[in-house]
Image (cartoon, rainbow, N blue to C red):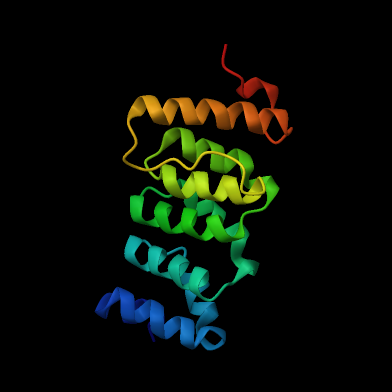
Length: 154
């Protein structure tokens, strides 16, 4: 017997997320299994469902997907963390901000953790604007002792 959630995703990604969110408690185990699927659509849909279902218990599993090889999975993981990140996630989020390409989501997550204080970086900002904003984030997070001094650039 296959994974019902991944079968739904294979048929229609958006519908799978919507239906799994509605039946979350019944299908949660299959969602968690899908986080480890070889298929990036399964992983991204699982994270999207966890976000929509407001499942904060899966944060540790989702945060690992910020480093996923697939850009859509990384994007969904950052979207999840924009809502559910904790202070321990700051180094991971800052690295995602520096590396891109999901500058907006990474900066939103950092801003939420910093009491809505800090630059929101748009994905289409110029490289100069991005670098200036990232430099301000770096100094702010070091000043708040959320990043080590070793992150300071000379």
